[in-house]
Image (cartoon, rainbow, N blue to C red; front, side, top):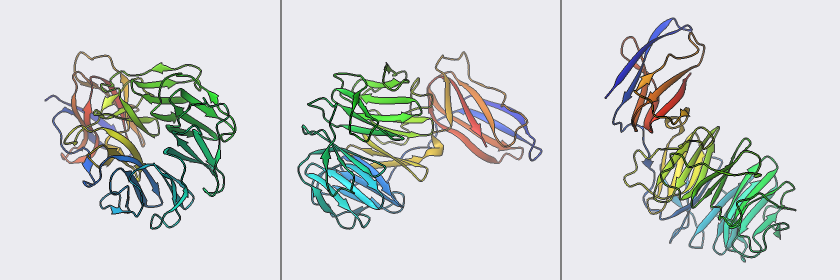
Length: 378
């Protein structure tokens, strides 16, 4: 192990503190399993303080009201809940046999559409969109699911609505023929590229659109006019789901677990600490500052967001040594940034101690690839 200490002065309380960088084997920060009985966890959403998880098998829907500590089986009479969304106080479940709606937090469900094999659901304003594998591709409801109409003008005639993403009033749909966008709530769609590529998942951060496919992650910085494959550090390129938090994007992969990028996909690093077996991750949910990962055959896992975000990958160039740079600004009130170099991939811990040797903060505690990183302390 290598340990580097720096003395910094914090003006606000006129005290010194140590920042310690250690490349160690750590078991403190990791994924923790929240359930064991679920099979393939296909979808997750939250309504109020409740988390809903759509599964495959005898029990297709579960609910937790205590951040995943306990789960209750919901009475949904089908075998797979492939998509979930919330509109107001209504929860919608998309299944192989249509759409169900609950207006009492999941206690009771009514089938409101029975024709389509549902792949995806999303809510934008008062509009609810459904992606299907039928020739209808995309359906829209403007009255809480009472009626559904096709919203397919401009879509490929054989389009399949695999996944949705929303940015303001714009809605994006990923199909087997690339990405489409609508700026008028599905009345018309415009093709944005990636033709003949099946889009498994979509995400948006600012002006960046991310498309997860069987070959990794494509990113567009100009609303789909051009796309670039961004796979640096992504050791498994079977990308099935995304989640975003601020400028951070998580990618769930098939048999490769979870990866994180803090610089818009330019670099990725693995965050699989705690998994007993590296799982296939099929769905994400971020709720109450916790990230949940729904897996295939390994139920649901969770970990605090504070363990894994707030770290920026400045460069993927391999440093000549481990090092910890001077914090800046210094003095500071109330935040300061700390830059550090990691020569070899491994678990990295950065902790703040006072002069009495008491730990006052843990800033980083996870596996990082070699490169230059920056974290912030408040």
